[in-house]
Length: 394
Image (tube, rainbow, N blue to C red; front, side, top):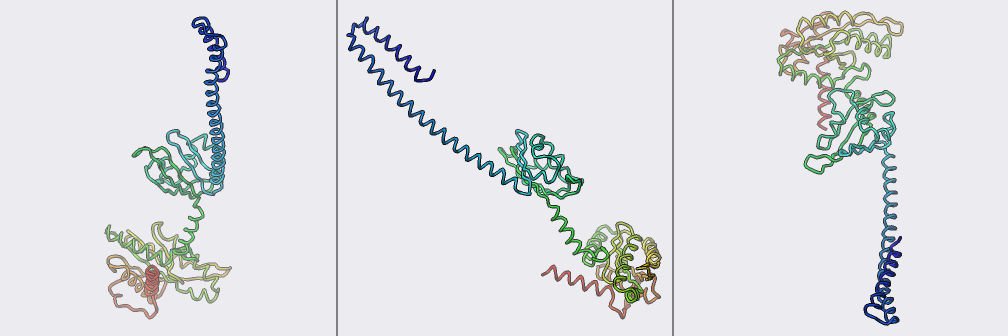
């Protein structure tokens, strides 16, 4: 029964009671009684009905506005959802209180699970974002650091290949340290990392041999010297120049010379330890840096290099041969600073050449005033270091 029916029912009952009371108790005339009984309640009823109609119209209008606003919000929500899903980056929002996560469809480009799988299993995102490298902040730990954070990690993607990802998170609080939600973004930075590595390779490594170039050698030497002085351990520099290389270039061409230099680089690396740095200064000149190595160990390595590098090479079915001349200086006996140490290794190397080539020579005090007629490695190295410094200053 609706409200109007109820009102008419009540009104009918009221009229009957009023009529009986007025007629039998007060003996009011029937026509007057009927007029009063019908008129007064009818006026009140009409007024109530009009009020109800107005309220009903207002409710209908409000309902229409609400439905209209709901449709607008629904369209905006769908638009926002489509917009977020159109980005290559993955966006997510984690509701801490309800332990629910929303994540965009771009996550499917990285891992083999569907978007809905993450909504149904909150811990799944932690599984796929498990870092391959130890010491990297885990995804769950990042969610609760109470501050904005950007973290880079290496993971395995759906093709079982390594990928670099950058995870950015922003927590929202309802108290000093009470996190209620964490919003974030996951970006695939693999190409950027590959480019950085490529540029680093170009900047610090020799194109031909993939050995450290002069810039990286100089950088390594400065750090090695600082470590040596701080911990009071030895630092040794070995300069190597190939005798007979010009003849290889003249007879087999530059291509043959390049092949030989690559092989020399491989042989040098096979003669030293993993912690030693072997670099190419340019042309047929190489440098090896040793830390915490005794003189007897240096002699053993030098003799091994003489034997291994002097062995014949087969280049395009032709036999070629070079011999190394080696100069060695040791910190602190042969110099307290980098330039002196390099200069004295250079002097020792050219003295080895003059002794008959294919040998090694430690720097001694007798070589203090030694001057080679040729432009030595020292001059070339210092010149390149000066150019590096000028580049940084600019």
